[in-house]
Length: 126
Image (cartoon, rainbow, N blue to C red; front, side, top):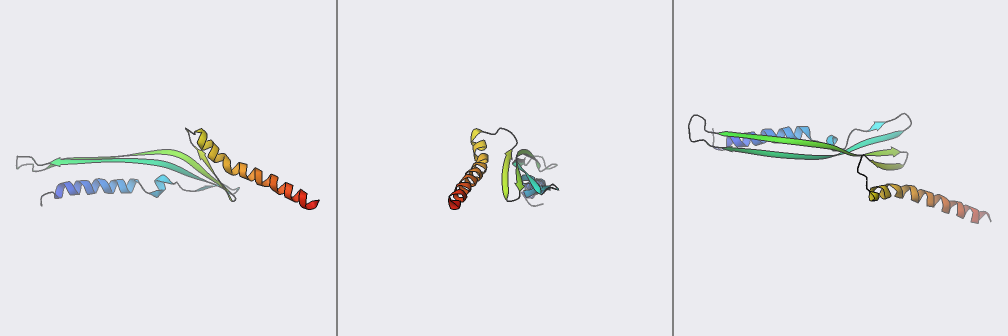
C-alpha cells in the first residue's frame, strides 16, 4: 500500500458517513399538511464534529494505527406554520422578547392595515 493511503481511507469513510447522516432534510424537515390547509415545517439546528488521527509504528508487523470519530447533534429550533398566504414562525424554546416581537410584526401590520382600510372606506362613503 502507498504511504498515507490508510489514513485517507479512514477519513473518507468517516466523511461519507457524515454526509449520509446530514442532508437538507435534517435541517428543514418534511412538510406536514392538515386537512384544513395548514402546513407545518419543522426546522432544526445541526452541529457536527469530526476527528481523525493515526501514526506509523516502528514495528513492521503493524505499520499503521489510527482511528476516527464523528458526532452529530440535531436540536429542534422552530416550526414554520403556513396558513393561506400567511407564514408564522413558532419557536420551540428559549424565545427571547425580540423573537416574540418579530413574530408579532405581521399581526400588528395586518391590524393596522384593516383599521386604515376601514377609515378609508368610511371617508369615501362620506
